[in-house]
Length: 230
Image 1: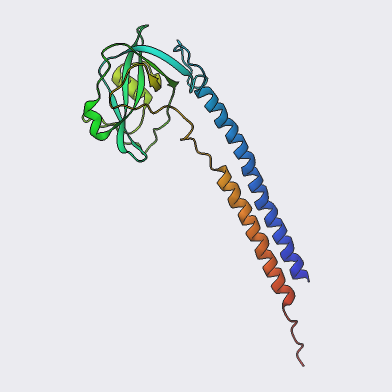
Image 2 (image 1 turned 180 degrees about the horizontal axis):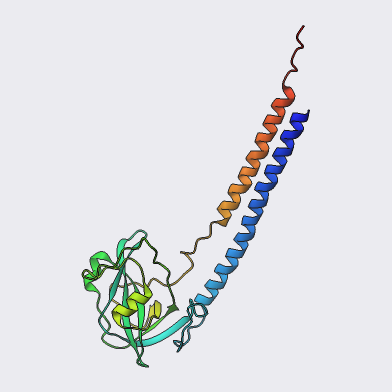
């Protein structure tokens, strides 16, 4: 009997811990969904003019509309699109009507269409979102400047190379056609939200733990008592 009570205690204790971890993940899920909803709301708000002094925290995802001309230069950042394949983000400097030089992420171009990228011959209005992408880490290769292939959007380095402010507008739509370039607007798709899977895992482990405890306890209760030696 003592062994069965011990097994039940271990089973209930372990299940309680696993269930508490599952509940914590559900709480994290609600927290993450609220954050994603807030970001989505900020992204889709009405665009405003480009701020004079943009703040990377307060103005992240700020919708803006900016009018100007591309100066003909471009940086190509290697990316891949589902069901399309390899290609590039086209990052160009724009000279705004106010005389500022900022970076515009114009969007995606297929690898084979890179040579067809041109620039509008007149001012264009770009509606999009300010973004400070964090894509650089210790494993990111240095850009191949000769081939003009970059492996991440390194905002300070791109701004220095193209002589612009360290300010990036990710295009959502433009007032003029942009040839083979298709906008890749800011969204929440790249923000991980795996808390539901984690919660299901913890609750499943709790169920398995309870089941195993029941099996061991049942086996223990059916074990024959040892015969005394005569």
